[in-house]
Amino acid sequence: MARELCFNFDALLEEAVLSSEGASRVVECEKTERGCSRVFIVELDNGAKVAAKLPYRFAGPPGLTVRSEVATVQYVREKTSVPVPNILSWSSDADTNVVGADYIIEEVMPGILLQDAWASWDENDDALRIGCIQSIARLVEELCGLDFPTFGSIYFNTSDRPSGAVRIDDTYCIGPHCGRLHSGSSDRSAARLRLLTAPGLQRGPFIAHNFLDPNRQDRHRRLIDNYMNTLKTIINTEAVRSLSHPTLSPPDCHKANILVDPHDTMKITGILKRQSATVDPAFVHATASRDFTRLLDMEGLEKKFDEIPAEVVEIQTAAWRCARTWFACTREMPKIGNAVELDPKAQIAGPVLYSPSEDEVEGFDVIADERQDGRQLKLGLETVLDCETDGWLEASKWEDVLPKYRMFYEASRHYCVEEREDHQSESDALAELERLWPWDMH
Image 1 (cartoon, one colour):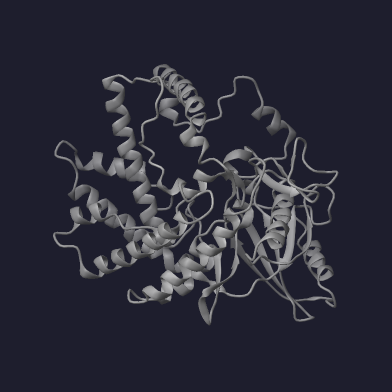
Image 2: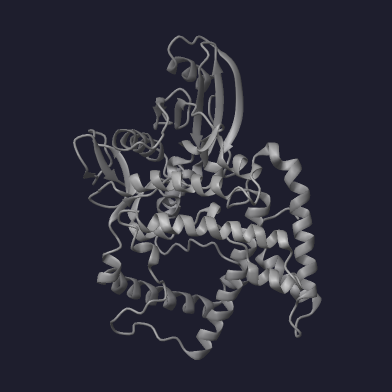
């Protein structure tokens, strides 16, 4: 399983004790989760609290993910005022350390989760929301102002730096990208690695009833070829190159990953889930979504209600203010300021590399509409359930969230049946919902 970890728990606790001066034993230990890591909050007998973090296999490439996070935290501490923890102990060599896994032990940062503070505000607390967004933007602006020679992740510029790393200065360098979309499999198995590099390997994922369709495979290959040829042309245009300066991404700036002062919620005290801090083209960060700027699907609501309830309108109005505030802030940021206005539909001068037929355009439109519906459904679920993008949530919230999840599912079934197209049967409408539904357990 993706979240399964094998390690020596007693050895991890012993490392936590050794990392804190004056500590001799563990007083209390609480297990929690932070997106890509399992975390143990360890209270020690000297009064200190430390967080022992172990990345899951899907967090990034083993051996590199922890090394990069540690180097990035130290780099950010030295170059900016962004609040980061003091790292007390770490290891990226699971094969030789006593814990048997990559880990980081760091001081616990103070504060409460922004999502908890946000949930306590009502529609009239605009000043708190906007002030908090502006505080986040100031920190992101500092990160965007840092300069880098190329794209990738930050590492220490030591003798064991990754092969091919590019120097930043005497202390740091840029090496392999640790982002989950770039790192491939994180399975340590030699047999698995051989399988992943096998000639002609079909990597999937595949839908069983489509996998053996030769026509679909041929169309897919042609589409990939056209995409790669088009991409090579686009990345060499001045419009794209001017928005591609290497930029350190802010960590995952969602409400569940930001800590604020409980007495002054406009003061950011820490940012969690730092594995996502990588150096990418500026336009990548400019287009990244934040859940505090997410708007409701008013078009969908207009179909559902004869008159949209006043409380929904108030929520949408508050969301618009948040979105406008963030947009105004990002326009003033180094490197990504111009990229936030990048029009993905803008025409780029040059030869036409791909001209789909009318039948292909019609088919693509159907697929695009279905995927857009799927994205909207998933975003709605994430918002209602306050969960991770893969549907995961803390075990402590399970009993409260499960009834909401089931109610949302039943409401979606009812809506699909009531609002189905004239040519659709009830069973077809429900089958479409099942195809779009992002997670199991309903």
